Length: 281
Figure (cartoon, rainbow, N blue to C red):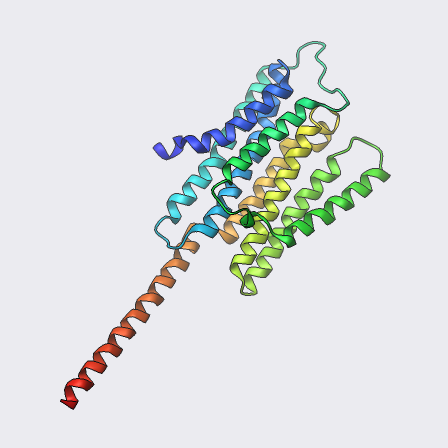
């Protein structure tokens, strides 16, 4: 049961969500609950994906696959309960009479929430080479789709941010598919990197858009509660296709078996040489 109380897993989810709720909630219990509801799941998934990348490039044997995957999923678990509590609390603390929920304009509070999220990400990846989180193909997909969304938002009236947030979700889906194609083409490491980093870029961009637009009308247009389910679906598909623990473990076991066969063959060859030497004598 102690695995569920991993302190680092709890802190990296709760700290950025709580900071955003305090900064943007501005004393409103309802607003703070809405922020917890909308941020818990995507923040949990984001840091779980960061953990996935660290697992991919750091494991050299299969003994720790299950424990590493468990920690990774615990992060998602903590994000899920934060969102669940935020959902029911938001229904309990209804909007106060006369409360202003939308206020157009630039917000330093939102920038502060984004900066704290970035600092938490920097802390979580500090022990890993930064190159693990850089993938040109995933970056290209994200930039192309975001540019297309910005072009369409200019030509259509309405609150900004909704098209870009959907573009980031599409970019994540396309990155996962590109990663699968690369994987089945024979380059498993590159395929997993494209998919994982595409998901990370998409989720991070989505969270930034949500935080910066929380005090504007774009929050309602984004429909975070529904969008979070889409993020869970694409992440679940990624885990199923790439990081099923049994599949990883099987790969390591196959490598171990191959190493053992090679060692046995070497021993047989050594014995044959000794027998030849004895026969010559």
